[in-house]
Every structure is written in structure tokens, then in C-alpha cells.
Length: 306
Length: 266
Image (cartoon, rainbow over all chains, first blue to last red; front, side, top):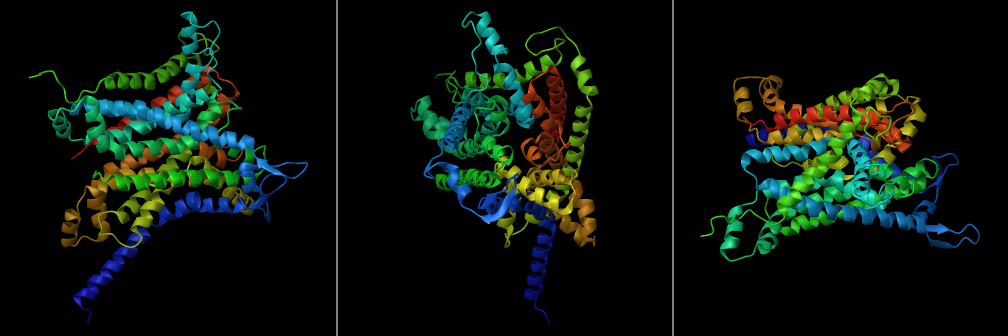
């Protein structure tokens, strides 16, 4: 005779088994068409490039060496690969500045939205959601039309007589920066807003009762309470900005490459799939480090939310 | 008593917020305006005209790419929503069990990896399979889109499920309903708004994808976004503005619908 406890255990085991069966299709698709292939990239980064793309199945550390180094074709000495270092530096710099820019603009915007009345809040949220779900390529294209030499900005500057010839913004790092800040702004506003919406303004009032200045209230009360949202927003902006492909392709022209363009090049004209793979893994590592920093910080902040 | 001292006021914040909203919408408005431009270029205004919409509507490549986008988006959205619904049922309303955290991590994994890396990984993996099987149809794009749509479809469905308790399902079981009948008559109708929201999100996400599609597609498999990217790189005509405008209209319609479906509380 099975005891009641055994029956309950068996039911629980069946429940867990059913739950695995139910989630199997989703897990399988993600493994086959997202996670699994990442392992192949890792393997490819240790192989020899094939003459027409793809790889030869022969171990070689060259791809990893050439992520940051280049071999002199005459005397075989290794030196820092200036071109790659430049692109790494540019990508990280642009991603960081984009994050700072969107935070500077997004924080007050989220605050503004969260301090509206219940009814109008939904409208503001809707207004920020629309660009968020609008095709990124279309938004980048919209920026291109504004900043190019014949665009609105230059037309106005010339009409006002401030400049006589158009200011070249397009195809510069500044253009990439403007474009990325523009397309990723909603990604910063939304999580900050989510934190801000839950903010208890009685705490703010208490701060003022204790003679705190507006700035002090912002710094000592509001900011610490919405910090999880700020960190989440920063991560949400930094990761896609670092791996951005569309924005630098459209606004940076051919010369101002970012990491993703460099990676693409290895799978196209460069015909160096192992190097492309090694660069991809490097991008992943940077992203993982950023994510880990986020998780640690979110754990440390100790602010309960949700 | 300072009657007009607002505790919610912060100096300059409203101005920055106003600037943000203007800056967010201005480029889009300009883009739409130039779609109705009669002139041949986007640098001068030649009067109102619908000619670029007509020329886009007659462009075989555009029609082709649009149909392909819809085809991939529809199949990927339906598949990912079904899988996400199943996964959400399996990961909510339960005490923690071994593997639950793993499932969360696995389902959200596509969100953690930069698109370019996934794109490269799929390019390598699928090119092997193409050589091996000789098949080079839309299946690869559909598989890739289904995978990265799952976490998006999963979000609203899981959120909806977490707000549903098991009372009604238990009552149905007490009244001798089979598990399937309970699901069909109780769980599914209650979950429906979440599923619908997930479906729409997945469809929009699939429709918007550029990077992964660009790497996975075989020759002649352009979707609307990859076709547009190619055109923009070659030099722009108001036709791109017209296509963008139509695309925008569709996105706004879906998002509006989504907004109302997911905001509806009962």
C-alpha cells in the first residue's frame, strides 16, 4: 500500500515531468536556433580560415591572436593591431557615451511621466512606447534625413546665416552617437519609469520637511530608490549599443566601423570566419561582464522593488 | 504656508522631457512628410503627391519583400506564441522545482546576446546544414525568428498567468472536468488577452528584425527591412520614405492594439 506521502510525491514528480514536457518545444527551438550555435562560434574561432570563406578543420590560435595583434608580413613580429584597437575603442566609447546621453535625457523624462496624474500617465507611456516598437531601421533612416547635408538642421543653419556650407555630421562618429541616443532613448526611459511609478512621494515630502533642498532630495531620496531602474536602463542601452549594426551601417558610412561591422566584414570580403568568430565571442564576453556587474549591483543595492 | 510649493517639481526636468518628446517625434514627422513629396529627391519640397506610394506599390521587389516579411512574421509569431504559452504554463503558478531557474535563463537567453553574435552563429550553423541537406528555403529564417520571438511572446503571457490563481481550475477539476477540458474552458479564455498581446509583440519583433535576417537569409530572401537597408546604403529616394510610412502605420496600429489589450484589466 502506498502511503499518502508516497502518492503526493508521485503526483509532484508527474507534475514536474509534465512541466518539462510543456516547456520542451520552446527550449528546443531556442537551443537549436539561438543558444546552440553560439558553441559552434566558439569552436570556429580556433580553426583555420578556408580560402573562400568558411573554415578548414585545423586548429589554429591565429584568430584569437589577431583580435588585438597583427603579424608583420616581413619579419613575423607581433604588434598591436591598431585598426582593431581603434574599432574596439570607438565601439566601447560610443556605447558608454550613448548610455550617459540617454540617461541624462531619459531620467528627467521618466520623472516627468511618473509625476503626471494617473490618467495622463498612460498617454505619456503610450507616446514613449510608439517609437520603442517602431522599426529601428526606419528610425535610423529618419535621423539620417535630419542630419545629412541637405537635411533640416543644415538647411536651418544656412538660412539663419550661421554657416555658409553644410556642417558634415553624417558619416562621422557624432552621427552614430546621435542615431544611437535617438533609437535607444525609449529603452532607458521605460525601466526608469517603471521604478519611478512605484516611488512613494511621501518620502520626498519627508525630505522637504527636514529642510532638504530639491537637489538633495533628488540625490539622496529619489535617485537611490529608482536606482534599479537606472541600472536596468543602462544595461538595456549599453548592450545593443555595443553590438549596434544598423545605426553605424546607415549613419557611419563605410569608414566609421563599429565592432559589428568589423565582424560582418570577416564573413564577407574579409573571408576570415575564425577571426569573425573570435571577435563575436569577444563582444559576448564584454556583454557578459557588463551583465554580471549589473546583477552584482542590483543585488547589492538592497532596495526592494517589484 | 507656501501654497505653490510642489514636492514633485524638479527644476529643468519638464523642459528636458518636452525636448525629448519633440526630438523623438520630429524626425518621424519629417520622414512621413517627405513621403508625400512630389519632387525626385528628399532635399527639396515639390508639392504634395502620392506618386512614391504608387511607385512603391508597383515595385515587384517591395511587394515580394513585404509578402515574405508577413509570411515569416505570421508563422514565427504563431509558433513562438504557442511555445511561449506552453512554457509559461510550465513555469508559473508552482512552487520552485529543479530546473525552473534554468528554464527562465534559457527562455530569456536570446535577449542577453547581441544580435550580431546570434546572426553570425546562425550564419555558420545554417550554412553547414544547407550544405548537408541541400535545403535553402525560408525554414531557416522562420526558425531563427521563432527562437528570438519566444522571450517576447513569453513576457505578457507569463505576466497574465501570474495574476490568475488556481481557484477556478480547481473548481473545474472538482466538477470532474478533464485536464484538457479545464484548460480549454477555464485557463485559455482567461489567458487569452495575454496570448493575444504575446502574439502581437512577436509579430512586430519579427517584422522589425534586420540584423539576424541579414545574416541568415539566402540570396533572393530579402525581407522588407533588409531590402530597405540595401536601398538606403545605395542612396535614398522618397520611395523609401513611402515604404517607411506604410510600415510605421502598421506598427502604430499593432502597438495601439497591444496597448489596449495588455492594459485591459478585469
